[in-house]
Length: 265
Image 1 (cartoon, rainbow, N blue to C red):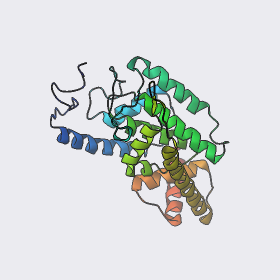
Image 2 (image 1 turned 30 degrees about the vertical axis):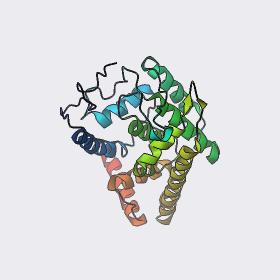
Image 3 (image 1 turned 120 degrees about the vertical axis):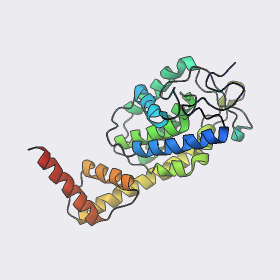
Image 4 (image 1 turned 135 degrees about the vertical axis):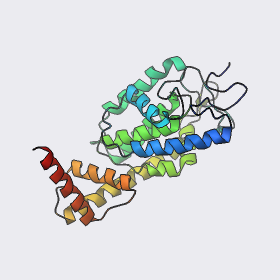
């Protein structure tokens, strides 16, 4: 079948810059997506987590590169995976994408994250991320979109995560997602979810430590330890790419309070 996403007689995806050299196209994509992802991970206002929001996130990440950014793929795809001996994961049929993704997203939104044991959160979060990734809604950019979306989802539940761990170990992360989804009609269930659970557990544990550190800093400067204050500092640290001191946090939150008071007049 002819792939409408590719340039004729080429493995290069059609792109807005009309770059037809494969390496140049990959470099351009990496530059633009890095910039867009840095915008998204500091956006504290992402509140809805449904299929439309997932598509919106894909659009925001890839809007500079692909005309079809944010649109589910219209063809079925296969990708040879080295860790599977060049076999491909059996991704969702293109006609089932919204249905399959929405089922996982419904489960994610219905689960009681904040009241569950840590081990349950690790297992459920890794399972949902893997299943959503297996849908592979888009022709390209699924791992970046799904991992970012799921990381923002779990933090919206009040559970912080060190998502940079996924970015800094991108190859491991993709292989772990592949291993967690190795189910085949002819070969049976060959899944190994432990690799994904391991990195998810590490990221959530680091997120816990990050939250505890901020709580200690708020106590040290006698400021309210509220989820709102904790969230503000988490996103401020990410935006500035550094961990701020207790005194810096005090000045920042006091200035935020002063600005909100002024805005009411």
